[in-house]
Image 1 (cartoon, rainbow, N blue to C red):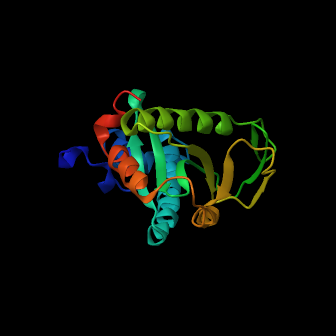
Image 2 (image 1 turned 60 degrees about the vertical axis):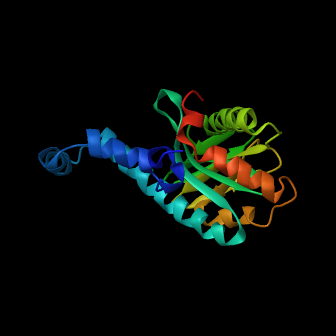
Length: 206
């Protein structure tokens, strides 16, 4: 594995940060947008980046419990896995959403922001976890259970009916609840999964 292929050096939000650096607005465009108070696609990117950074900071604290943590894993078709956690308690594919000062309600596949239309967050999180399973099991050669997790940042209220949801749903400061989980992978398997997951080329066709 070359240094360029080692995803363990990625910071939270690496993909969004690169996108802003390459395609984001220049100084004049930013000033005009602020003066006109006109929302732009770049605002959404910055908001997403801030959310991934906050969640990433919480996840990095779990390293002291033996977690292996990866951020911004690039998949095919210009999408990525926001965060991946690996430890004896299993593998968790984490999708981050930033909804500042919003209320969230979730049950079944329905996740609503301020009582709006259901957002497809749960379905997309499950699909992402399945992609992660295919890659890890292909290279590891043993079953690798992957749970989808949705972490919602900045909300004023989060009501999730846990027994009815197909994904775990947390606020950013609740992800520590994953730390005590154990008994799924051996220590040797954890290191094997991590060695695969951190290799960029493993995900190139995922």
